[in-house]
Amino acid sequence: MLPDAGGIAPGKTFLPALGWCVLEPLPVHGWLVRPWRHGEDEPVIRGTLDLTDPAQRWVKVTGPNVSWSSKIRPLHADILHRLASRPDGLTPGELGTDLYGPGATTTVFPEMSKLRNEFGGLLHPPGDTRYRFGRNITIDIQQRADSTQ
Image 1 (cartoon, rainbow, N blue to C red):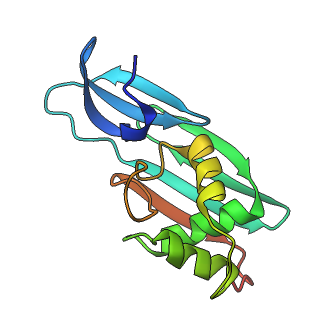
Image 2 (image 1 turned 180 degrees about the vertical axis):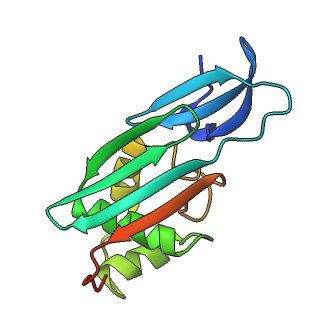
Image 3 (image 1 turned 30 degrees about the vertical axis):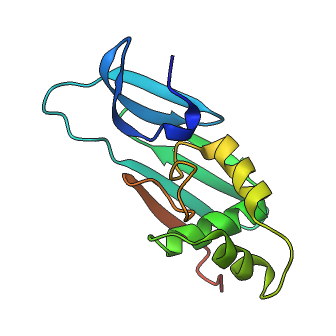
């Protein structure tokens, strides 16, 4: 069994029942668990935020042993775009101000909770003071050429 999901991140980890393993994210709380080979580097997981079609926005993920895509809501695409643009991450207050404007009373916690439910393996584990992508996640953004986002 995997440890509590709050502490799981892609990459090398020790699982008592299996020893050293490599975890790679799958959609909706899924993980590919495979044995770690001595000397193997941590996998780099490449995510692509595809914003080329305003009617259908996608997250596409590839890694050494995973490849999947998932359609996402426009608000979630906007959040992921903002996080990709700020590698050091954003505090909940900063992200809330970016999304809803200064003085807004709407919080980002419910939306971040939904994003973590769908794409938890891509985001830095909960408990951090900043929302951001995991340490070995590389994010590319594809936009329409005429996009002003």
